[in-house]
Length: 311
Image (cartoon, rainbow, N blue to C red; front, side):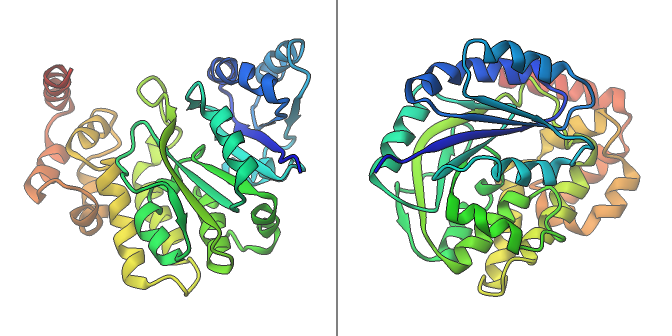
């Protein structure tokens, strides 16, 4: 039986980035007649116009512009439900696929059937063997923090069907994480692919989350993890929350310098998140306070020196 795969991309006001990334995967998609679904939450017609031009070279592109806008979470979940294929690969509009990623995953799903397939990424620090895992708590402990990366997961049709049965109220900004681990709590059909098949253009793109770094990666992240099904161990949940921050270094020294330069991290923000930062950051309390109160111009110079020393 032929196994079918679709690629879906939820996007918002980034037509040039989306165009570049589609250009990388189109040849591989053509080779296997893989349909591509674009769910566009943009405020203008630029993305729609760009997609119409691409469809002249590849007809298996379905474009849907959301009117009114769905917002990040609803758009992501909506995009997953657009295809009717056996498997759906959800990408963010800035997600990069390595040149042979599609062919390798086509080969894999043609010979194996797992409902959640999670892949390693170029910038991630996971070194677990490629294999099936059948314990959802073990999966959360080893891979939970990485499952936040939109683009790292292929979902089966069965997993996607669960969307309409889940309450996503406490999963703001991380609905795909809630879907993955809600499904695994019911049916632990999971495979980890250790090969680094995906990447991102973070160095070139300003994150959507930067203005809300603290609320997203502390408040929202803690909320979605703590509201996972009760079958997940509470101690394990706490470890996963901190592991994400420590591994991604979202509140690391350099990141906090950048946030201070942008005016996002300051004395008020330190006081608001003092207790949380002591857990989420690898910085000492002295460093956290110093970054929060030093003039931004001095912080900017320090950041430039650090950047040059690491280049």
